[in-house]
Length: 107
Length: 415
Ligand SMILES: Cc1cc2nc3c(=O)[nH]c(=O)nc-3n(C[C@H](O)[C@H](O)[C@H](O)COP(=O)(O)OP(=O)(O)OC[C@H]3O[C@@H](n4cnc5c(N)ncnc54)[C@H](O)[C@@H]3O)c2cc1C
Ligand SMILES: [Zn+2]
Image 1 (tube, protein in one colour):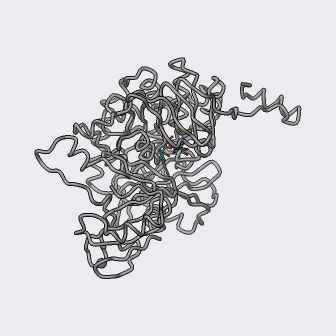
Image 2: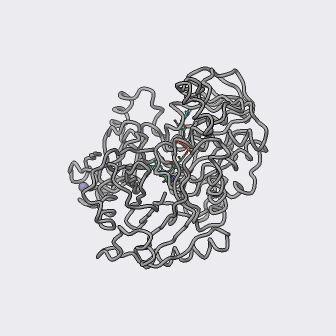
Image 3: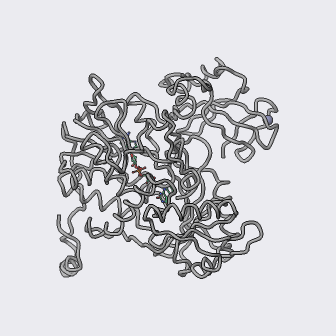
């Protein structure tokens, strides 16, 4: 069972408390943007087999959105951080690099 | 290839079954092919089969990283139906369903197609309205479905509880020629037919890179060496994103786990397929007597072919309410597959930004039923370089242009 630590309330929440929200750090595009940008934001996904950054909500806890780094091939959790982060924190990125030397980075 | 027949069984019985030959060859890869298909699931194998049968292209290799049929095509709950809402969906699914009717004869392989009838229960008023609308659409499309009353449901499914407190059965959408087939046999039958046409089905051969020159595909690198090809078809379901990255583009697809389970074998008690989409559960009984049960997908990206326990619980909770008789049946096995979910829950059969490279994916939770139709359409695309009428609307650019084929009601949870 997947367990993620909520970065706000510190609860080690198990899957039934959480709501998945898909790929994190997407750049938003709104009305007036090009079809390519809009498609990239709405539909195109990295969907990697490996390190994935994603949005989660502590739905049956504090109710807040947060972000998590997880491996989709092994279900290993690397860490969680607040939803307001424009990019993954450097210490988390370094931790992942140390564990997965072949990883090409989060972009 | 020696034909399978009642005479063959008699002949082999008389000589201690020493004369059966291998169903397909296991060749080493050649240095080059006219066409390479990546992925020996049902869709990849059917694509290769129709490349040979409909278009005369037989210098073909089908490359499989594991064993053939080891992906979703060997992990599904084998439901076959074509009662979709949108015209382009019902055209390809009905093409597939009608090809299932004669598949055993066409392939000389018993795929155990069993058009036993399929019910999609309406358990909310919203759902009832939606299914009535689909029945009307199906009538215009020439797909035989009907709306039936709760009493008719009860007659077809005596073990059902039609007046449960939370989700009473308000009626059902019924497709009398929907049903099931044996998934392994579909994969094996196509593999045998492809091998017989001279194609190479190469297992334990993982594609690790896609080679191209001036925007045109030239071949692949694999765990068994580099192989060149004039045309490439990517048909890898849950791994579509991984292969698309090798080919240099991104897809509107997320890979997630979908689970199924079977019970201990019990006496025959249900001879149709019942789907209950509001509560995310569906059920049929195999010839061995096992109840074959499935539910909804997990919500997060996952490549592990293992799903979350609470989804099994959800599915069973719903089914027990609808079929109280099964509440004490023991479950035997449970497993997962990685399904490729697109943004509009409809598949992609498309050219790609890379020249002579084509992709067939996005069948998600419901592509077993589509295997022959999808192979038919994909073979046409690979052979001619342009989609035929079946595939035309399923291109990957529809997401940019807003031409969605919105089946999320019908295909998002249902199989
Ligand atoms: C639990 C479950 C229940 C389902 N129930 C139903 C149902 O009742 N009815 C229905 O219609 N559909 C159902 N489906 C969906 C259906 O199984 C799939 O849509 C369909 O089987 C997809 O077939 P495919 O050939 O595209 O993919 P797969 O059968 O998954 O084949 C893809 C193949 O590609 C191979 N591959 C991947 N990467 C590489 C690589 N790099 N190199 C070489 N090979 C590679 C894989 O090993 C795999 O064998 C269900 C799915 C699941 C998981
Ligand atoms: Zn919290």
